[in-house]
Every structure is written in C-alpha cells, then in structure tokens.
Length: 203
Image (spheres, rainbow, N blue to C red):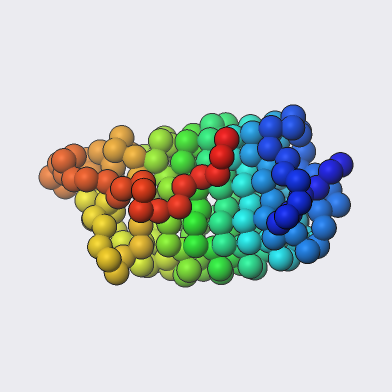
C-alpha cells in the first residue's frame, strides 16, 4: 500500500480501511484523514520514530489500542477529531508522547476521559475537547499538562491568558461541568479564539 511522509504524496480520502503498512522510517508527516479506518492496532507506527505530525481525523475510528502510538516520542501534533464512533480512550493511549503540543479530540463522541489519560503530556499547549458527550472530568485530568489551566474549576477552562496554554471545551460540556460543580453560570465568557491556535488540516 502506498505511504507518505514529509515531501511525499498524501493519502487523505483514499478509501483506506486500515492503517497503511511500510511507511518509510524517515517520514515526518502522515495525513490519513477522510478515510474509513476503524481501528488503530498496537504499535501501528513502530518503525516511524521520526513522526512529528499525524492526522487521523474524519475516519470511522471506534477503537484505538492503548499502545497504538508507542514509539512516537517526537510526535508534536495528533488529530483524532471527527471520529464520532469513538466513545472512550484507554488511559495509556498518549503515554510516551512527551513532545505532543497539539491534540484534537473534538467531535469524537467521547463519553468519558479515563483517569490519567493526559499523564506525562507536559508539553501540551492546545487541547480540543468540544462537541463530545462528556459528563465530567476526572480530578487529575490536567495534572501533568498543568499549563492548560490554573485550576480545575470549570469556569477557568476558557479564560485565555498570555502565560496559559489553551483548552477548548464545548459550551454544552461546560454547562454540565458547572452544574456538577454547583458553580454560578458563566455562559457569557468568551471562548478562546480559534484563530489564535492551530486548527485541523484540510478536509
């Protein structure tokens, strides 16, 4: 099956039903969005230690193995958005991705975030969680990527500050979190401007 990387052909919208094999070890960017991939097996990219960008949005992902991204220590951008059949992620899914600074999990149908899901992501700057079915956030959700917010109070999540990294959570989810925390309504707060942060790739 054809592969891609930086300065190589891309494979979006090619009808792929599985992660392609034989990806060159020198590849840095891989674009697999808009296909029909439903599962990312363990160590799918074990020979691709140079990856810095991986786009898997707009697929039909229903399962991502806990070790699917093992070995991608240099990965900086991971886009898993618009996979509406993905209700949950194993807590170990992103472990070892110490250089990850942008993570798209929006529009994934996520119903929960496993305890420790973002553990070890100290470099994370941009996290997109809007348009999911989240009912609550575990207490340690932002323990390691601590610069995403100052404290775990729902109304603080959307307050942009020059020294703070950004998390984008949909208004529906925010209202649920506020109700659970019995905090006053803050619906009028402005969300971080999409133009200030990297967005997903071309569809």
